[in-house]
Image (cartoon, rainbow, N blue to C red):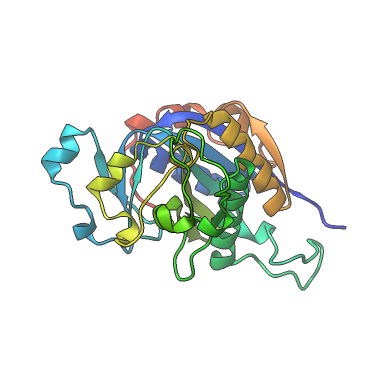
Length: 290
């Protein structure tokens, strides 16, 4: 009988991007050494534009002066993908998973023929988590062939009634804007351990996306759950939905832990580095990545 993996989830609140990068580095190292279980960080970032490995600098269309005026930082990082924005009202998820603990398909965890989950399948599962999460809030979404992320699905919308918060009922899908991106995904994998992850626009100020060409895609707009529903959502409620869907999609047991100290206290045989080191992330100089 298959044994469920354990995913420890920590909700961190608002974290600046540089701290988030260093925190991931610490946790990836601990996961590789099997000193922690799989972990999922859910957080918000202060306004930041990030450029992945395949990013084109020209996709940042705002001037440095405008970025400074709006309080937006700029970072290069080693995740996949192009240019994106993170900011308040957006739930960012960083899964620190060892993919060797997750099988492709429905293979039994004890099977000698079990195949480790690959990068593409991992991304498809992240998309599935977010598609199910949006469905929990009556927002139909889908994948778009050839692109990564989660997009609104106009065919799944119920146009028989007006959306909450809108005065005029759309007569058909043709009268509303085209499919729009609700969630971006970009990951990094080193020795089977994942970092970076996804960003789900919940109550995000979408005007920040005017500073960039999101993911280098000009033909499709960006949206948020708030914009689709016409009302803001409680981020904790959305986080609970994300957790539940991670457990289902990854066939795992979700364990909510209150602090990083609690996460690091779940060791496997060997004492971990003192949690105080993670509390001093702002003072660290290390920027190397595994």
